[in-house]
Amino acid sequence: MPRAHHVRVSLLVFLLTAVLAGAESKAEIEFADRLARLGVDQIEERVTLASWAQGKGLANQAIDLLNDILKAKPGHPKARSLLGYEQIDGQWLAGEELYLAKKWVRWLGRWMPPAQQRKLVARRDALRAKLRARSGWDKAWETKTAHFTITSNAQVRVVEEISLAMEQYYTVANRMFLLRGAQAQIPVEVYADQAEFQRVSAASGIAVANGVLGYYVPGKDLIRCFYAGNMESTLSVLFHETTHLIVNRFAKREVPTWTDEGLAVYFEDAQRLEDRVDPDAVPWSRLWHLRDMLGQGPINLDDIVTCAHRNYSVEYYPRGWSLVHFLLQGAKGKYRKLFVSYLLALRSGGDQSAMELFVRNIGKRPADLHSEWLAHIHGIEPRTGAEYAAAALDSIGFRLDPVGAQQYAEKGVAAAPEDWRTHAALGRVLLARARLESDQQLGAAAVAALDRAVALAKADPASIRARVKGPKKESLAVWAGLVEDRVFALIAAGDSDRAIVAAGELLEIDEASAHAYAALSVIGAQSASGRAEAAECIATARDLGNDHLVRWCSARLVAANGDTREAQRLLAEAVALDGRGLGREWYKREMSRVALAPWKRVP
Image: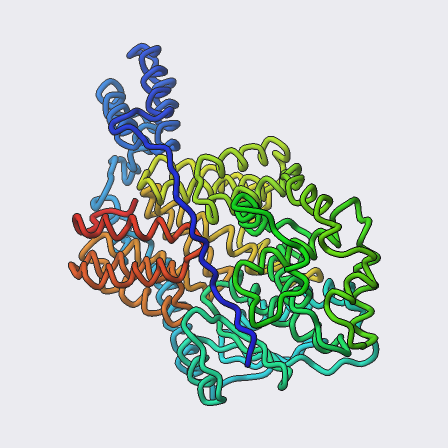
């Protein structure tokens, strides 16, 4: 039987601080205070305040103030500009008059230059033609890296990114396992969609449920998975299952389950950076899950080591990971060499029991390590900007704690103000809050934080393409993820015009971005004139990867067309697919919102 990698759902109580209805935000209070201090004749200061208000998501206040300014000074150029006016042939024009004068066209319900519209449509249609040409496993193609043979019918850029990440993974894994001599290529099958993955698996005698993202077949030395719609989930599966394969190639005896699964989870949780994989980074959600279990009662380390595979249920995964992490990282490295000796003993063969093997190589029974292990588990806290950033993202997803997540993110920015990752984490947390609370001001704050991250990282499309193609072969997924977050932050802020431009930039970086097309569909869904094109965009997104976010975008479109029942069904699927993340609460809230009234605007 294959070892299945399941989406594990954490059953946690969601606690949020209630927000008093009608309470003013800090930005609103500051705006009112600053305006009260200005005289009606302080035109420039009032224009500056209006510009600040727009950046804080206070659109109505900014518009009212700018209109007041124009009553006093009708020709003020910056005030006119902030209200969307441009001067054409000596006349100030805005809205449809302006766009018609500029010969712009409507697409997705928005006005844009014809060249922009043609480029977006041509790119989309060319991509859909490629998708049709590659549909079906019979169209699968093969690529070889130094250590992997990857067969896939997924998009070329998906396979290229997987190939790069798998070699980065192999580099760090081999430092631990020290595989000797020539090694056979590791065969990996990556299916473009789940349905085909399930069909092929069933045809080979392996029945897989919807929650199974991939598996390893020991007898065939085969890794099989499907592209889960985003690179992070897909790579986590591949790292986990490939570790099983390497461990079983490496060992000349039966591998104790805690070792096999503990190492698989250790590498599954590896952090993907621009140019490498870091398995030593702390997976905060895994750590917090373990601490939650410790709060319910003591954990017996002897039981972890002796647990048979058939009894190794879901609660053992964080326990096995914790023992591996302690032996590698804990007690100031005291047990690291002993754990390496333990692994080498697996390569030497033998028939000792799991407990005998542990005691012989570590020098103690697991239970005798309990106090040191416990001190290690309780002593791990974020200290660097990168650690605060990672803790913030896990806090908003695993813990569903937006207040705690923002505190972590702000500490990360304070600890490393010039690190783009800390600003990106703050932006992602603010975007999550904007989604949960349906708050455009929080969306605007997310845009500001992500703009800062993009500026610090110099993450314009041309620079990103150069880095991805350059000698360091930086990760497309990491950089595209930053740009993608900014697209959805602009949507959350209600700035659809800039969101379309940003989605176009994302497609320049990653032509097969499902989320870029999904975002365009959300924008088009906002007006009746944009929904036909929105339907084309969401169909493209589904073809590329129908993950939980794409389902949310699909729900936005069908709800805008009046089919609330179908929207509810799609959102229920999204909840199930994001059982460990923000979506398990956000999509439920969206279900309540669509039940009350059709979506008229995007929060």
